[in-house]
Length: 107
Image (tube, rainbow, N blue to C red; front, side, top):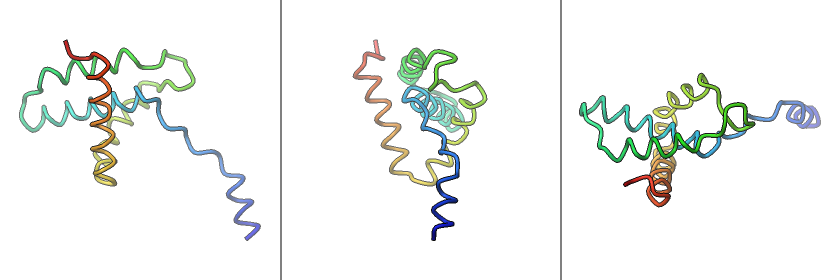
């Protein structure tokens, strides 16, 4: 038991969750990509919401900013996240959309 506790203590901390804007932008970009694949069309408000979240990304070099490769990996993880927990995925995406709309993303 002590060995297990010591092992757990010595493990590095898990990566912190991405900043809200990073996560929401990944959700919205994945939503846009999926709509484009499925129908070949993307609703206009989606672009406004994407741009709204893009403008809120942490500045490059900030502690919570992702590098381009990390952003891509986060976006590519969305289908896996949805498969692992569809309700949470749907709630996160809807929360991101609602927050952007309430924040004035739509003209």
